[in-house]
Image 1 (cartoon, rainbow, N blue to C red):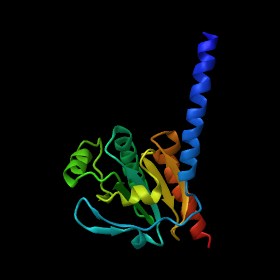
Image 2 (image 1 turned 90 degrees about the horizontal axis):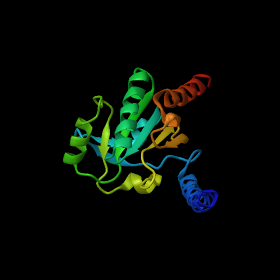
Image 3 (image 1 turned 30 degrees about the horizontal axis):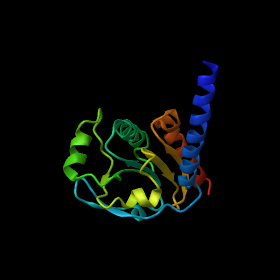
Image 4 (image 1 turned 180 degrees about the vertical axis):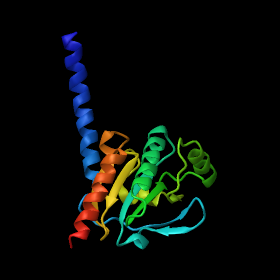
Amino acid sequence: MKRFLFVFGAVLVPVFAAHLALAAGLFKTGEKAPSFTLTAITGETVSLDAYKGKVVVLGLFHICDPCMMQGSTLQKVSEMTKGKEVAVIGVNSSGNSKKDVGEFLSAFPVKVTYPYLLDPGKVTDKLYGGGKFIPNVYVIDQNGIIRWQRVGNMDLAGADVIAAEVDKLLTAQSKM
């Protein structure tokens, strides 16, 4: 049994480390958030640049259960930050059709009221390095700089954690 655990660990540890190294290369904290303009599922055109001066919570999603959970979490963040200089935006970054995204959103346990954008060309997936590591949540400051990012639907990216990161940026701005 010890030999099995040793061999199992010897194989898994390098694989896990390689995935972490690849994921770390995707973190863009401190960098300018790449700009994009996409169409929301409701039909309006939305540009990230239009939110300059606000804190932006950006979620990149595919059609999957973890993305549904994280998208629902962003709805909570949207409600928690209502009335503040905050914008919550979701993007289907995997190029799914409007019909498929609409069906996906209708299955959410909560009604999504924040803009949910379609990305048929997978532009945001390329700009933000998504793909294998989804869902991805970014908190972008009022000047367009990524200040916080998490991958996955864990306690590390829960509504309270995201809202606390947003509040840090709002507080820093009010002290200026």
